[in-house]
Image 1: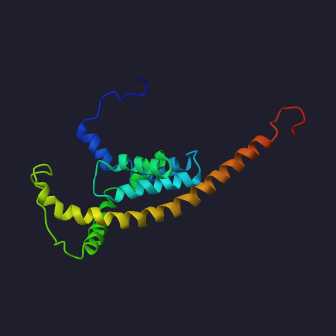
Image 2: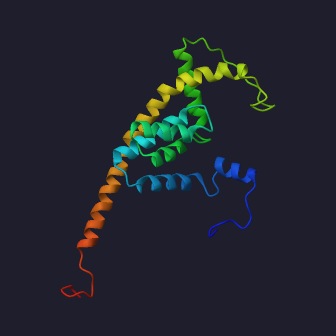
Image 3: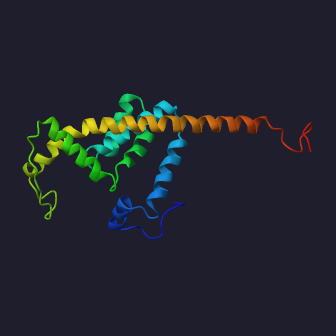
Length: 190
């Protein structure tokens, strides 16, 4: 393979890179913005896809965000690639705030009946009974819908004008570039 690594990364190293980027968070953020701008779909489809990804990132079900985002984008007619990029809205810096908001909103929607519980995950998630996780997952699962809709709406209205302006500027630059005569051709100014 042309771009294969000389030494394969260990599983621990791959997990670390997914949780904490090699370079920096700002560089990773700029990359997502760059990729979002360069998509060739309409600004509406890109913004819908990104909003679907941001909505999926609010849910507490880690490991399903990208699949959930792609399915949501496909259902609502958004860009699937933009939805995958939108899932990066959920990251270790934003998850505590998103999940706390989801839990509190879900608790209010349930009538404030959910009691604050602590879960001991020192033995691992799969060693704990689902009955211990459900008192926290139930309000989070319910609360992530309104919180996710608010986040998705905000993302849509932030992303659409950004992509529209970028695509308009790019079309204008390409149009101007093709209208200029090439130096050295007959009729061109020296």
